[in-house]
Length: 129
Image 1 (cartoon, rainbow, N blue to C red):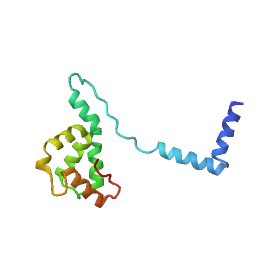
Image 2 (image 1 turned 180 degrees about the vertical axis):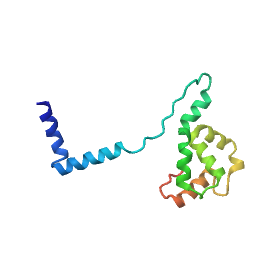
Image 3 (image 1 turned 135 degrees about the vertical axis):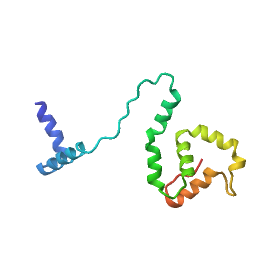
Image 4 (image 1 turned 60 degrees about the vertical axis):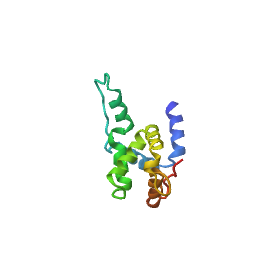
């Protein structure tokens, strides 16, 4: 009885054998894909800053995504600044506001200029708030 109810629900999504077979093949292919990297941390006593950095930086994945997205469009220094802005937005924003007079360009701050530059290459880049 329970199997019949389950099969009726399945028949809504997969109305024939071909549809069900295709989905089974697709799911098996997905299961065969390589798994993402897993990290296990141990012995973290007193290592709060290092642990938080690993979490915020996604163990380097954010830096990889910046490189994939912008490639050679931005310099290494700009890449580092963007990564740090993503990792520590409050800290970077505070530092930006305290040094605004030394980092401003004719049209605004360095981050504003960077975002404007990024929008040229990636039109969906949001404007700074």
